Length: 197
Ligand SMILES: [Fe+2]
Image (cartoon, rainbow, N blue to C red; front, side, top):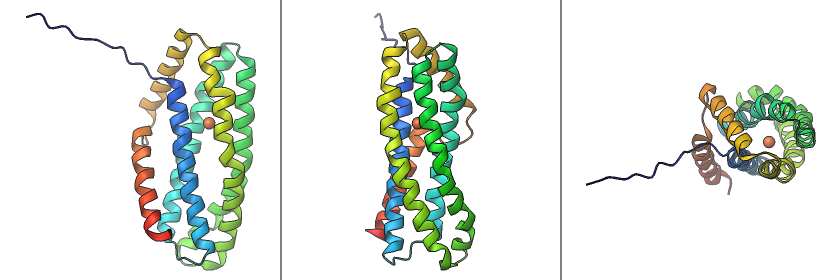
């Protein structure tokens, strides 16, 4: 009997991958928002949860997603002469980077918070609210103004090539991948839900 198989070539869809990453980052921001609301309402949120959330947020948004944009996608768009898309992505990336000053203020006092110093709580709340407010809208805007337009702005071959480059980034990335982050953020939502609402 002749066995036939459908061999499907699977290449990474860069647009889906990048937008999935945005959704994970947004969910981490939503957990952060709940944590802050809980803290403001006098709920004793465990420092471990705060540190886990902030740590995962910074790792996923800066080192996993942001590095991919800066080291892979921006140079690729530059190389292919896609100046408008590149300029838009650079501008969003700069907008995000400017918000990291709030996170720096939080990271400065996170160890104190973890060791029980509640006098730093307001600093975490104030900077956290500013960070969330300014960063939260960036991802959807970036989807619309950059990522969704990649399908029109790049040829099928270029999209495949970009997908391969992102795949290479994934292979060399020592941390969790998107599927792991999706599971980790689900666990964190559950943990935060038990404590805060
Ligand atoms: Fe992004």
